[in-house]
Length: 268
Image 1 (cartoon, rainbow, N blue to C red):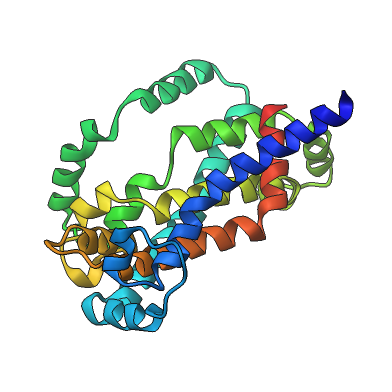
Image 2 (cartoon, one colour):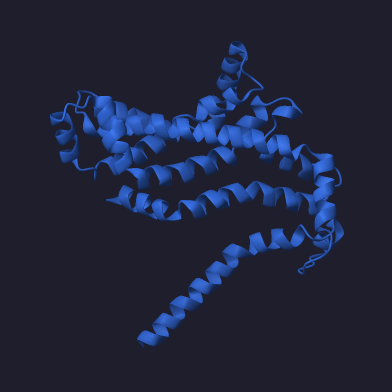
């Protein structure tokens, strides 16, 4: 019975893995075929890969869009990690009156859809003259209630004895945070970095509104413009999607061990 159970579990995992990996396999196969072959459902590698790549770079400024996305994702991730970790650390370590009420209000903000603040954000950044810039995309995503909650939950398992020992050694509060807390919480930072980078990299709606010129567009916007044409070329769209997907896959595989440790730490 145990062997049958193990076989059943492995068979189930294989089926789930195959279903999960099928879209990626379809993209890789599709970028080597012509648009008509993809529409017909051809599921074998073709010889159009280099032609699709050349046409993609002729029709869209992919290099500039990639750099724009990278700039927004990297700077936005670094700022989010710093600000949200400071907030989560403060909520958990320091005991003050009204802290729980403030945190409750912060959690309620998660219930507000982005569409409700989209127009006020647009008017605000328009008045500041920041539209059509990376700053307009990064500022609204620097702090999120979820990420503050994530750091706060992980900080519950942080050993307070380390802070007490640091205070005895004469460290001020900022050095306690940078020299003791941050190195100890590396898995949490890695997990948060993956989540935040993927969110910033794949961000679509707000960049679509805030970025007006082609030189400022990000990769998701470029892919969307290719797909929304009157006669889309699915071969070059598949190439663009693969290029867009690669950075997030690379980040995840580089930090996957720390990601698992960080996510487990948030449950404790």
